[in-house]
Amino acid sequence: MTPLDATRFVWQLIERGMFSWYELKMFVEHAAIITSDALHVLAGIAVWIVAGLAQRRPLTGWLPWLWVLAAILLNETIDLWVEQWPIAAMQYGESAKDVMLTMIVPTLLMAAARWRPNLFAARARTPRRSRRR
Image (cartoon, rainbow, N blue to C red; front, side, top):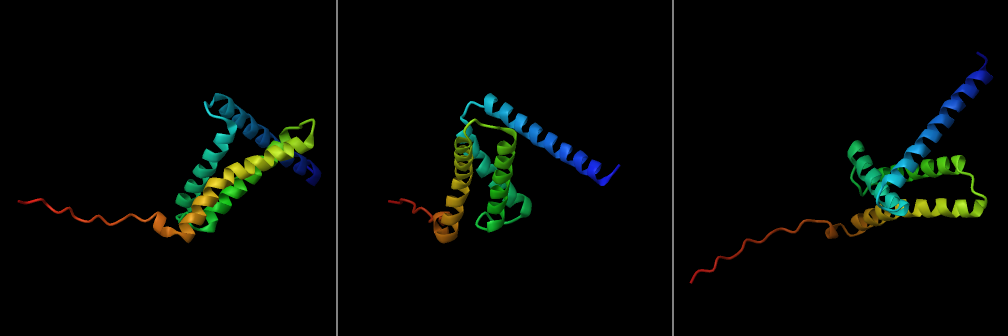
């Protein structure tokens, strides 16, 4: 097998993986009872939390947030590769919207937790006074 044949073989595997991922996404999108936009929001939150747990990092750190960004950029790259819309500007706009929808909640929650941590802190309970007469 020549290096060129090996490269073609690897590329075919990558391309098959991209098409399989796309087909799985289409199945989930059509089987779900919520819109694809809502799925992007939920997926962003799920990836953010799982990345934080898997890396044992707080959600206020950049690393879990960067995993969400990497995941959505990979996902949208696959979408742009697999789908071919008649008007490219519409497809790019849809991809940009998907990136924004996926990143908005992790971004807002991370920023709020970093700059206003007291919003997320548990309040100490004060013991109730018993009413004795």
